[in-house]
Figure 1 (cartoon, rainbow, N blue to C red):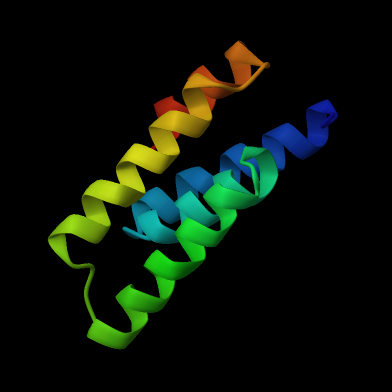
Figure 2 (figure 1 turned 90 degrees about the horizontal axis):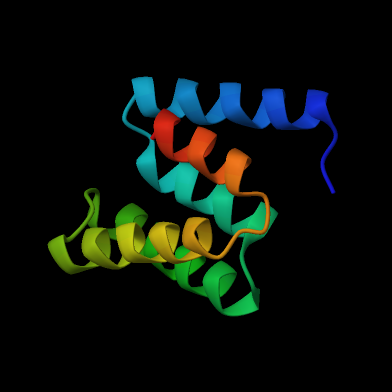
Length: 88
């Protein structure tokens, strides 16, 4: 369980990434903090596709967004999930 300061630091990092359009990095942060092994593997594959292509292919972007929504919808800490979603 994350303490208050860890949550605030994560929310700040997500907001900063959003401001600079680093949405894939946010997906990675969310997956590694709250996702399962399958989520983590999927976002790592999406990051690799993003890097090798130099841009995020359409279907990889759709998959990334779906993974993030799946994780947020299944988080036990609903308040934190809403805060994260508000920073995306």
